[in-house]
Length: 102
Image (cartoon, rainbow, N blue to C red):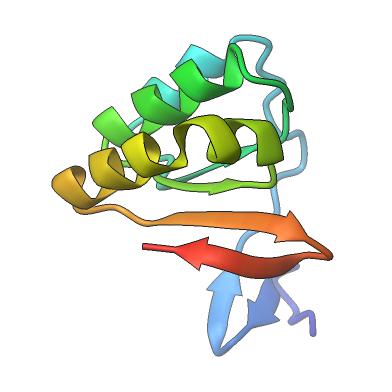
C-alpha cells in the first residue's frame, strides 16, 4: 500500500523508496556499510561466497543464503560464527523454505 509521500507501508512501517538505488560492484562495500543490517548472498558456488558470508557475520550482519554448496561444506562453521557474533543465518536450501536458522 502506498501513501501520499510515495513511501510503501509494510507491516505497519513506512519504508522510503530510493529513486536511484546505489549500484555496488564490490561486495565488501556492502558488508562494511554500517547502514546494512542484512546481507543476502546469491553468488552461488563455494568461493568467494563462503568468505563473504563469514566477513558479513564478522561485521555483525545477519545473512540469508540459498547456497547449498557452502552450507553443505561449511554450514557448521558458518552457524558457529553467527552464534558467536549474535547474528542470524537463514539458509533457504529448497523451494524458498527456510531450512536452517540460528
